[in-house]
Length: 339
Image (cartoon, rainbow, N blue to C red):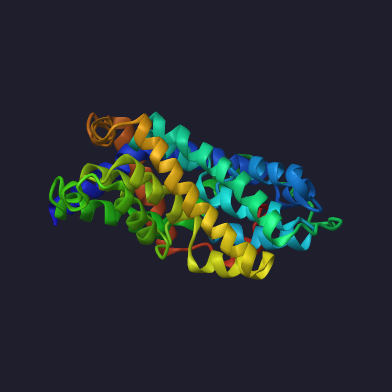
């Protein structure tokens, strides 16, 4: 039990300085970029320009796979085409400013760069495929809510460490717990022996593991890092990093209702095929030994700053678990209509 707690604490500490900075940056985005702005930019958009705008807006936004669904629904109702809607659904949950920084902290620069690039590319391709399969039927955008007048530090901190952290605190806690369990209970080299270097088998397995598992882009990081340390190839772990946050039962059914079943099938196929292709590229760029080294080094050399940030995050995570931000409270908060 002590080993599990120590593993949990070390992974949280390794990520925590970047998570603190990342959530703060996400809070700034949440306060200064309201949903009305997103709707104005993308509402009524179709064709490749609409798909491109959806990707450029979606990649940096710190929104998980469930949080993206109501926004995508609003975009569709405001006139965004099927291609742009699909591109937003694909690119947004895979990454965000907070998860990019946390990926760098725990898995190194190659993964940190590859994640937003993969999200952007699959979003562009997926949007184009959906547009070709399902057609594009954008209409004029309608007016949306006005941005909040409250944009000070208090609003940013509330968005960062209450609303945004609170929205992912459960999957993040589960992700850290799964990482600790894998690290402590799975023997070193287990997956290397199980797959025997057969990535043609390991990658589909990681996709199947990620598909039904609701895990946000930040929570997927410690799980992927622990899988690499136990013998999963960097490319197979990258497949999990892409598929886990991008696809779950709720996102698939919502996509089917917004863009149609054929287009939703193309949306899922694009994510899985794109994850496999990107996994192969990651394997070509980075070898397993350096990936394991990055994951291992992240949990060593922890400084007082790491532990201070970890303590702050732990307190906020516990607080958010005990006192979750409900819809009624969000509705009363001055920045609640944003994002």
